[in-house]
Length: 297
Image 1 (cartoon, one colour):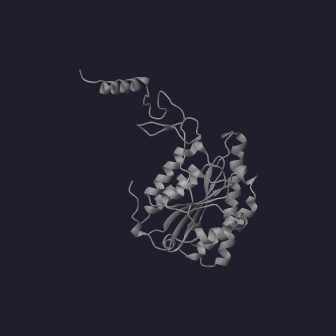
Image 2: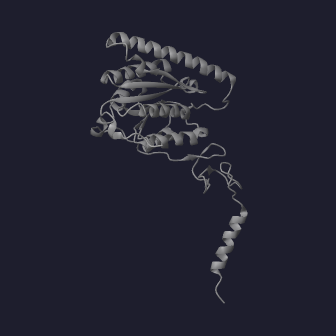
Image 3: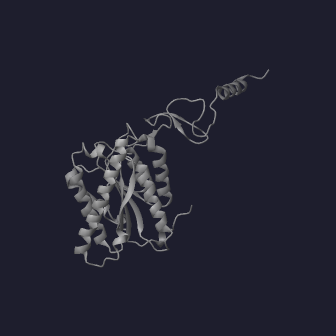
């Protein structure tokens, strides 16, 4: 599927897709509680909308069991230019939708649909963001510059490796950078790869209490202005993959030559495409090698 040409984008108008991590597993043990984290995010979103009246912000909540759209600034465009009245209403609507989402996600958690897994559904929220962006691409020749900002704190979910990588390559093809602001204790390999491959910015704030300063100085600038700024660069990117059999991050593994599936151990058959990794193939290759080495008589 062909992506929209970048030359039709407006230079300084942004469509910011914010993926907001609401996973209770992370925020219950974080040094920065969710109640203190959220005001930084709300102030940042308001500043994005004040930078340009054509800017658009969409917030997707990423929970433990589900993800959902909780805010779209395009619905506020017909409320006039009275920012003093719009901003409180905007925050109120977002908080209400966020509360409803958290309650619903908690109910799914009690049902134990993903028992033993503490990661957020990052793959789902990335897919929803890309679907929204594709809809904007097809709305007309002039549209804002889309980008995705992941405000993530949960650890990576190896079981989502394939879906996340597909989303990353889809964003790369559509020329949509994925920015990452990771709040966890250690770095996220998935988000590092996402930002590196799509040309986004990966940042792990050293002082979470000053989160708004990081957001406003690094992630508030539009894509056109980034060419004139010295933005943070990752010193190292973890390119390790997750195996398809046990969903664990591995350093070395076996790769199917047909579908490129990755396994931590040797299997007789590929669980993805059904290709057979039989001993007969190994025997045939060894036999042919012996024939090559046999001297002519």
